[in-house]
Amino acid sequence: MSNLAFPPRSLGTGDPWARATEDYIKHLQRRVQQLEQRVTNDGRSLSGLSESVSEQFVELQQQQQVIVRVLETLVDTQTQLNLINQITSDDELTEDDPGYLTPDPDTD
Image 1 (cartoon, rainbow, N blue to C red):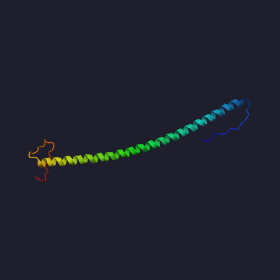
Image 2: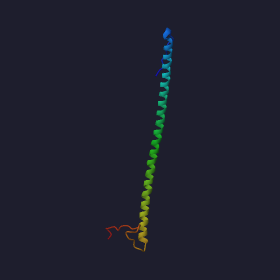
Image 3: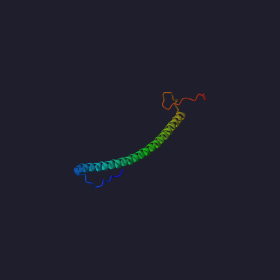
Image 4: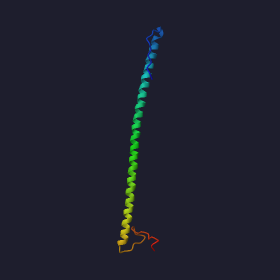
């Protein structure tokens, strides 16, 4: 918004009113400029915040993938340990034992 330039004038008895109106219009122009600047600054701030949140979201997704892979590895390791325990144990495990593996129906 451009500033209005009021030329000097002599309005006689209306001069004080015209000056007060002119001052009020200038005040409103300054307020509009301040608000425009504030909106621009807020937009920049929101843009930066949005980018930061987006980066954090991507990082969280990557960490989630790492956790899933670790959990899969733990399950595989536990399964292998159970199998080793079952093979090396002198005692035969029952279905109530935590390391019990259901027999493969193809091997019976």
